[in-house]
Length: 168
Image (cartoon, rainbow, N blue to C red):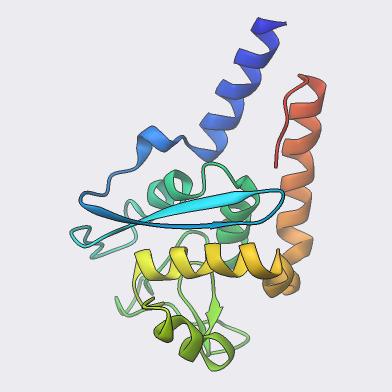
């Protein structure tokens, strides 16, 4: 039984990362919780992302306990915060108001994010505000890409169930 749990944990951590992969320093911890889950996102004042290198590792480290958010980030932006051609913050193809890794819609969420102290133009702010959205609205803000991420998440749950491990 221990072998199955260990194997599943190794499999999931290789897919989604672990908290030990966090590379931020001097974090401010933002915690939100609901009855079923909680997400803690460390917002660093010293992390610098000048390109997309390291963004995927950061996302996996921040969302280690909510793998569905990792899948959403993969589907929404391929883990990109910045446009590879211009170096500017990534905007959505279908909706230019969608910003960054988690494609947070600036028109609908920008003012709320700013009032909470999140800058969705930054990696840290985009990831942290997405955690808040997930805690308050579930995956609904990303329903447009659910055909992509729901299948990946369902596969992870099936693999974990086969090894008798819980996945959120």
